[in-house]
Length: 396
Ligand code: SF4
Image (cartoon, rainbow, N blue to C red):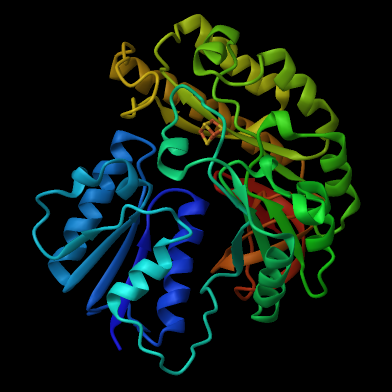
């Protein structure tokens, strides 16, 4: 039996991948330890140059304090050589996410010991329903490191959600790289059907989608979201740019007008997004269009990513926008996003909501707005908005 620790960098899919490795090691009888573990697993990210740098830093730190480090995830698949020269026993696992837990467990040495209860130490659980992407956005390295889109069977997803709910999780977040591509063809499931079924599992308090491409925002999906009481009225829809020329160069599958049109039926949902700032052909005018599409769509939170060329992508060799310009545009967009969030929160003053407390003093309301509440972690509490702070809505 070995002791191990698992860390992840990056998105919710990276989190679920790391968790699957953790589950597998626990199932094999290994012990998780926050300090002094023999083995470390670092599930890395390569979505930007900065993400690779941080991944390397975490791996190097882990190699100093563990006997062996397994480097898994996107960073390991794209740029295994990023971890060359890290002192220590470092194994770079260049494999698909489905194969990685078994590989790591096999290497650590599967010891069929007593089974552990592998509850995630979080109030919400992330359940991966899909992996990979068959789109080909010009800037994106994900299809190169994760392969084409494939889906889990609906039965496996529903069984996992049931298990998580039995373990005490109140909220489930369905994750994937390109969720709208979800299909269980053999059993006739689309994302909308899966959502209806998953959202009806007894004991589940809240169900959310991690993100969805605007092209996949169908009437059927929106109807499923509105008609299933546990589904949160929140949509994270990546915009990336509000300028048609930039969108075309990015090889996104919509223009700004289409983006707005497809979001219109989602009135009443809280909308959040991802935006890349400083893409090669983005000038100030194009950037201003992004600001105005964000405002027109009624988007609150923008996750802003300064453009970073990734190896192997169409735009790998292009990065003409100077870093100070990217920085200045990022700051403008983040400031606009913060104003939109605060405005959204103000609309909740005097209104009732139900908050899932996910850490001391804080939690998220029905539409994933942040609340400041005084209640035990893990509780779902009825609240009423009293005031707005810079960090969220103050519960009365
Ligand atoms: S949809 Fe585009 S940005 Fe998203 S993972 Fe696929 S290729 Fe990357």
